[in-house]
Length: 92
Length: 382
Image (tube, rainbow over all chains, first blue to last red; front, side, top):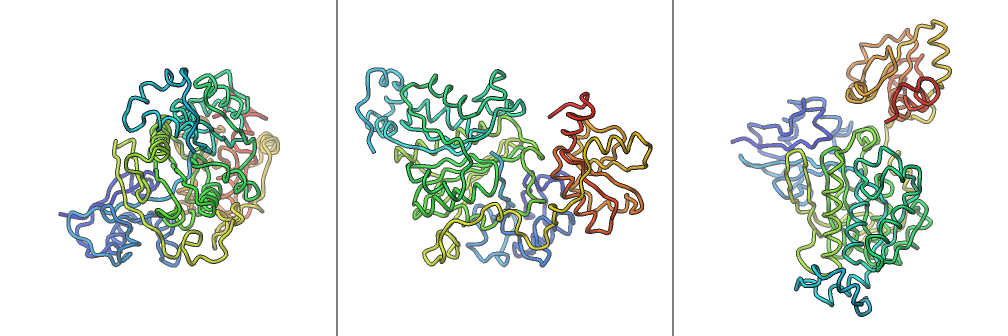
């Protein structure tokens, strides 16, 4: 079973309107994210800064946990896990 | 603070809620004695104010400076057609008084700014953030942290929303979750990206619910949790969030704790395009150029759905989000005029094109709205 990455609505224009992307093999959250941007290159500039850091306005959650309070991008993943990208939005 | 004894009228008004054992007379008096500040009366603010007023929150403060626009009505259910052009604050007050005459309303007809935020917020028990922009969200957060006030915060975009309760000392603050706002080019507003009208209704009622629970001290608060709502998928997910030990405002070792220049916050990204110095063309100038046969490539940088809705005849659709990947479709030798809805996205498009070596590029000042007003009234406003 693969790892599922939930794509927020604001980023779906970079994933051919897919609301989730499957990653077949990865051992860390960082590798999952790299696989997602390889599958959908336009997503790279909205997830990563020009020097390759994750943007601070995008929360990355492994299942229900914020990876910043785990081992960040080095956090281990298992088959069946869900990674959610949750960017800050400001509308009211 | 506990409110005064309930009158017979209040008992009748709140009877269905009063008989809940989680509320009761003491709970209702707690609501009566409560002071809640709602910042904004837009899509989220409308249900928040209606439900908090209906529930009998004794004093509602409202910060709002805007007028009712027709484009508000699909989601801002406080307002009706007769209210177009009126101050939102006046209409909101009238609506609340009709709904519940036992509620006091305190109004602030101004923007929340660094100069007034601490004064205004300090007079309330709870703040409900229903604003529509990042600078004000960070200003509210930082003010609430400095004053130790809980902030019931929701935000929406297109079909999705987020909700949490940021309570200093008891859980993370907004900055712990989102230390920085997105760069402007990655943060389209609802005016640009659209929003489903019912979505702020969903999030706003949840926000009112969290506020009432917090005041009553009942139930499980969203402190330390972030609720994500996807209205298209009918999906509700809850994520655990925690304090950032390095948070610049709420961590114990934070230095220089104080308010910032928030307008700069969202424009101070290294490498960001400078849209201040972008050359503009007025609607009249563009009309004259088109009239005298000057060869101009008119580029519409809005979304395809906006283009479908209305456009300036002869325009090429090239959405801002795709522009950097489709530069080869444009000739650097041609005179190019970019336009969008109001002129903000086209300014970014022109800055991007200039950055890529285009020289004869200008942005239509005021966008298609200005074109509609000044040149072609058959182009609808939206």
